[in-house]
Amino acid sequence: MTPLRWLASALFLLVLLAPGARADTPWIEPGTDGQPVVHLYFFWSLACPHCLTARPFIEAIPASRPWVKLHSLELSRHPQNVRHYVALADQLGQPAQYVPSLLFCGRMQTGWDDDASSGQALLADLDACRVAAMSDSALDTARALPAPGFSVPFLGDVTLDGYSLPIMTVLIAGLDAFNPCAFFVLLFLLSLMVHQNNRARMLAIGGVFVLVSGVMYFAFMAAWLNLFQLFGQLAWVTLAAGVMALAIALINIKDFFRFGRGISLSIPESRKPGIYRRARAILAAGNVPAMLAATVLLAVAVNVYELLCTAGFPMVYTRLLTLHDLGPGAHYLYLALYNGVYVIPLAVIVVVFAFTLGARKLSEREGRLLKLMSGVMMLQLGMLLVMAPDWLNRLGVAFALLGVALGATWLAARLTRA
Image 1 (cartoon, rainbow, N blue to C red):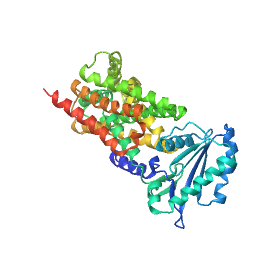
Image 2 (image 1 turned 180 degrees about the vertical axis):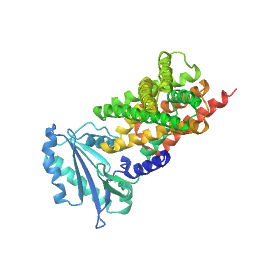
Image 3 (image 1 turned 45 degrees about the vertical axis):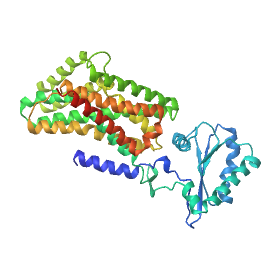
Image 4 (image 1 turned 135 degrees about the horizontal axis):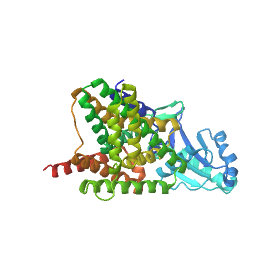
């Protein structure tokens, strides 16, 4: 399967498997008998005495009111439930700070006194919600109906309307793919190999370099993902990721105007002689297996040197990923899609070089424009992480971010054409 066909298949799979955005969480939906079913989300913790007091009463509600669909979700042992709580609270504009917490009919209640007071008040509210939902007009305004869904092993209940995250994945990865650091090394290596006039060897060595780079990038992003999952949904973690993204963005934008001066997130000049030496060692190897082994070593070394150059987008994207209520399998499937998109331009470069046997280097102007494009995109992502992270769940925002980044780069290219 070609890279483009693999990417299309993976994107289609993710569109089908991605859990629906939390804005589509159902509060009320029609039951099998046509009567409204009220969803009641009960978030509690084993370490919370009030939760344990409330739990028997709340979990008995569906027995007396079968039209209540209870979701009893414990937090201390289930991080995915914490993410679910935060997402639902964000939808209602409320902080996810206290337990027990009850969410239903577009409202949120926290705390519990006793069954006689808190319990009876809850039952009255549920009854009132159902009565209001009996009319079509109230039902239309009070509920958010889920899209048609189904159950998938390892991923749980999924819907067909979660388009924002897959498309945001492709857009961010697509911009990340145009990485001047990665282009610089690959173009240098392929330019050296042009003189050997051997297409098959160039495809093999270039393919191994791209493959190892993709695996290294996947491992790097998985490390970011695990770090963010360790901290969970803490607001300061998202804020810190946003501030770091802003810093990286400003450095990259600075590089467009003052390339190579001051702080720069590029391969250090002191490391470049070592990269050149390793690249030439590939050509000096006596046989193809030795050349491929030397290519693996070069790719590993280069990707270690590139960590600062490439840290921004993986950090922002993996934080964005952990803000969605996904299962572990879905997290890594998204990382696979991201890295599939990331290596496509590198793979295209290898194929073009192999079939044209042409030499090409990345000019300083091209490197500056790539820095500017990534910097503008990173600046927007950082600002949203700091001020309005929930906006990153909106499909229109994804295309707006891309449009601004490409527009700014196009304008800069026009102004610097001379």
